[in-house]
Amino acid sequence: MPKIIQKKDLPVQAWKNGGGVTSEIVIFPKEASLDHFDWRISMATIGLDGGFSEFAGVDRSLAMVAGKGVSLQFGKGGPQTLMPKDQPLRFAGEAKVYARLLQGEVIDFNVMTRRSSYRHLLRQQVFSMPETWAFAGESGLLFLAGGESVLCQKGGQQFVLKAMDSLLLSADDAGEWLLVPYGEVCLFFTDLIKVD
Image (cartoon, rainbow, N blue to C red; front, side, top):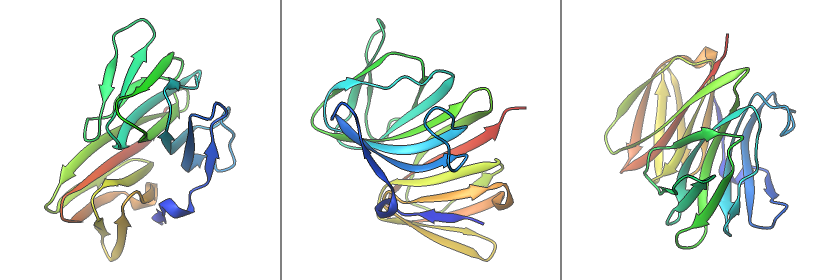
């Protein structure tokens, strides 16, 4: 059964270094810690330049929700800029990453999967006309990153996503979804697939 997760209901945790806060959208298994999850999806507000926490054995994808963007330094390589409406950036959780704000605080969207048990696909789409999404994964999440609202329909089921709300899906929800935006929207599509 699909489940709406509203931004206002998300638990918020301040970072130890004081540089930001994280709002956890969903973690699996449900009671897992940051050391033992199979997958985790969250938002973070970054208020200061600083390094990312390292997660050994985890693959990550990062997308920008709000703000002017960040410059990400990966070890000794060249910096990569990530801005709203850019496609998500994928990297290993072990990577040493330093984030520099381009112009004030930002909000990002973060998907993490433990590579021994799950993999993920995260993509971003901006649209203003109805679209269809063939959801075939075991678990999935739709997140409204920008715009006013989008109606999500499958069969007789209807759910309305407001800004920064999510729709959590399970294997029982597989099939073709009709997505009807109110004006132009930016939607993040996350598929979570168990590794055989």
